[in-house]
Length: 235
Image 1 (tube, rainbow, N blue to C red):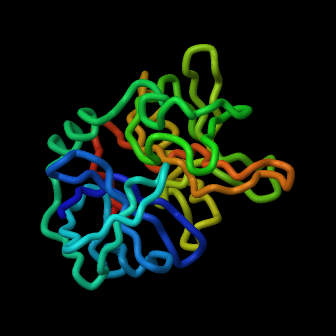
Image 2: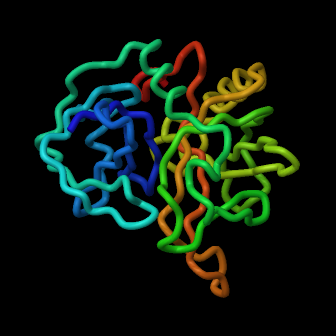
């Protein structure tokens, strides 16, 4: 199986998550291990994975469950970087799979929840996609106990404010926002009437002890029209 990477997201320090589009089916695939995926597999550490890279995963096995139907086990030692997709081709592929509505991506179980949205545990259609967001604003939110990166945009009469997990926007601890990079990207986004995003649903968790576990919307990556292949190595 060959994928082109379009999701690179932070986890706790030392680990990350990656996903891409299957070059045959044009469906999203999330390669997973029987443990968390170490950042050693990123190109900046000598591994195969980076944005817009074509990766031959070797033999894979479906291990997903709703809504994480994209999950496929792979052998990290067998994954090979076979090339980089050209900028125009990569952009065209993302636009081909992108949707204008989040409900089209994640299914009718997606529900608004405050300034964001979520699906109940083991509900939903899928957990990854590409999405067009209009009138977006990217910022570092310092109002919380720990600074976080959030993306704000308007869809119809609903104002969204959603956490960002794009690994390219964080320092090596995967917690501290890289202020200079966030500011540069925010300026670029502000100049666009709409922006192409890689979006996903989190693994299920409870926001409070009284809440049921849900899969929450997150912004995984931003894809600029003039630099869709912005790699982690070029941050």
